[in-house]
Length: 503
Image (cartoon, helix red, strand yellow):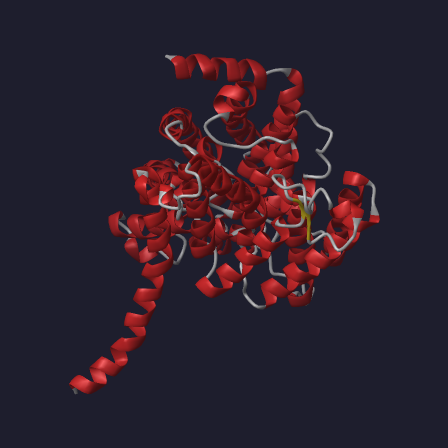
């Protein structure tokens, strides 16, 4: 009952005309950006961080949540019509969605994606409403040692999961940790790595780094790879409504995709890619028409799209309750919280209930707005695909530069933006994940603070991190996340030799 009362308060906040406006702006911008190939929710939120600097926090996060949900849906439009996923969670949708578009059933593919997103998003938001407070009760048992261990787990998770190579992930993390050391040491008052530049005494602005890595770096990388050739796009033909058979073949995949997406999204190693692939495989196994998969099976669009959107709600559970980012977009939203001087975690539910419950309530509203927006306006979003890419990329770079300058109105931020942007471009060329860098910059100083606090309480005794059961458990999980992939790779590499010897 306490949770329902808090949610009721959240609706009273989210349903004010001012916040409704920001929710509508968020889902509209999110869908529009999600439709554009290669521009996902992480880049969009990063790009808008400087713009919302003077916005009231609750309204800003209601808009960010709308952008997140909208972009997760919008990626399906390019996947279906262009065979170009707007973000990683829409890769699976492209397999059969584009095949449906080739057969003139693009409108039905977009409809099952929109309705599936609504169903999954609503159910998953309901799960978030009740799961997040349970996570908070667990986290309230934490002291400095446990918080340090939790942050080590967060750093390790993002490093191990977001990317193909652990060494590259660690390299990205250490760059972020190094950037986090710049500025005044809060305990000693000493300046660290400021190079005598007064503007660096407060540290490197997380927003500048996020915009540089995601907006500037991603855009430069997209420009370097894109040949600006016109892609083949399949127009929407015939009826835009799903038939009775389409409905009967879609509703079970929507529910199964939701059941896969939310819990996997909430896990530290979750994200949206794993549940979408699992959903595809599940639907193929359960389908009465497995031969249609790969050639335009509507279940192969319905299930993965539901899993994709359910995972978005799942990602928000550990972010809000524990301050634990499990995806690139969650890392950027963590930067957004820091922009307002707010630290996500168990205390957030007590210190700022209006923001938390207003944000959760806005997700229900955003899902309805997305459905209203996307079913009748599919043709409008398709028109966005005709924007010339050079104009689009130039606009992003100009917008990012202006936004970074308006944060503090100094040129040092612009220099940092473009240095970090070029670094982000180089990281993408070398296939180094950028999310660990942002997470390292944000959580590094907090982990250092909790580490010192734990040592102060224990009078310098390092055993405090292994004598507390929760801290020890979290550190063991973090160690396993690093060691298990290394062991598995070494065993795989050793297999061929073993086979040769046996022969």
